[in-house]
Every structure is written in structure tokens, then in C-alpha cells.
Image (cartoon, rainbow over all chains, first blue to last red; front, side):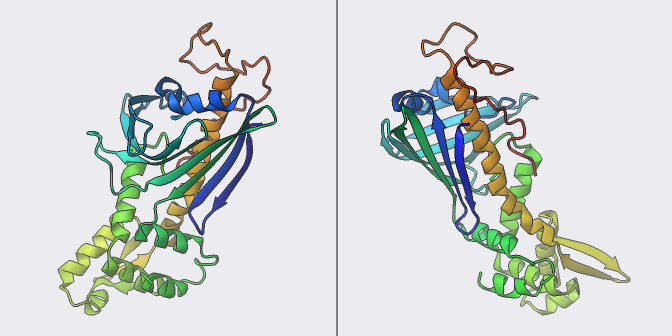
Length: 162
Length: 146
């Protein structure tokens, strides 16, 4: 199976995933670097992605939209931070409104992808971290607290720290 | 995060949730109403602002699903809905679903002939197409909704 491990760290709002592919690093990199290939896996089958801008250079943007079953469009963007082809890529991704303007009210994630050769194939490690805006942090802290339901009083402490 | 295939209403819901939480007074209202049901007028006594202003804050929280209002006699009682707080936690689960789906699709693409072109390149094969890779598990549940 290709997903080798997956870890969700609620404290740090981080998803870490390791996947192994039976293809060379250069081939896996193409899935990211070729917009026509990227759009075949980024969105789920029911919401196929169309990549418009695709500038994989530091500071560059990738913009795309996904088309839903009713023809509705969901726009998204990446802002590329670092690129070291074919080994690593860091970018932030988020949603945008219908004019392509980033939607500041929606959480964004910072992603780091690394590809390394391993056993004749490629290991892809992906780390996605939700942005750390105060309300998101707080929301997660609150949602995570065990027994919160029973101990509503704990909300006191949790919420006053904001 | 609502990553993929999200219904517009879910997106708008997250939007409202974050906006509702982005205000100190509203977080304080959540705190107070998590301990006890309070009437809007009792709440209003706690803040240096008008009854109407407090009522507005409560309305924002209510629209975001963070509080529930109940009428009791002449009073409106406000209670914090703790379930709503779990929603953000599900964001990570959704992200997981999205990435599991992505990895599965990446595997499928890689399993195609490297000299692409023999068969329709833009459709996902309905069933496991792989000659060499036994690893095509579909993740129909990705982007598990709310």
C-alpha cells in the first residue's frame, strides 16, 4: 500500500504522512511539477481540478479551481515558499473566493513535501500544518480537551487565555 | 480543514465559526455560558456595552452554532454548544481523508504506462487497472463531510 504511515498531531495541528511509490523520484516529482498531472490527483474525482497558474518557484503561485458535480467551482491557491527539484517543495495552500482572492476566513495549511529514493522507488513525506491564527489554536485546544463536555468549568481557563 | 469537495454551506459554516471566535467579548460569552445558562440581560450586565450590542454578539455566536438560545418565560437563555467546538478538530480528519485520496490517485497515475497515451488519460480507471501494482485502493470516503 502506498500510505506507509500517517500521524495526526492535534497539539501542533499537524498531519504527517509517509507514502511509498514504485516509481523513481523524478517521475513522482512530475506529479507535482506538471500541472496536467497535478490536476489529475489534487482534487477528488467528483471535484476535478483545473490548474491555471503554475509557477513552482519561490514566491510563485499555483492557482486552480475544482468543479463540482453541479458545475459549481471552488477556487484554491498555493504560494510556493521553497523548491528544490526533484527533492522538496514547500508551499502554503488555501481557498479563494470566486474571483481568486484568498479567503482569509478559511484556514490555510503550510505544506512541506520531500521525495527520497528508497528501495528502487520513492518515499514521499508530507507534512501539513494548519495556520496558527489565534482562533484556530484556541478552537483546537478546546476541542481537544478530554472530558470537556463534563467539565464545562474548564472552559473558563481555556478561554481566558485568549 | 475543509480541503476537498466541500459543500459550500460547510465552507460558509467554517467561515462563520472562525469569525465568531475572533472576538474577545464573544469568547468571554462562550466561557460564561459554558458554565451556566445565562439570560441576555444578565450577560449584558457583565460588559460595558449596550444590551443591543451584547445581543448582537450572541446572534453571531448563534449563527456560528456556538451557542443555543432558549426562551424561558420572558427571558432568552444562552447556552454554549460544546459540540460545535469539535468541528475544528474534524478539520484534521478531513485533511487526512483528502491526502489518502491524493496518494491513492498518485499511485494510480504512476502505475500508468510511462509513455502515457495508450488509453484515455484524463479519466480514472474504474477498477484496478494495474499490471504491476497491487496497490489501488480507492478512498471513496475522502473529504469525509462534516
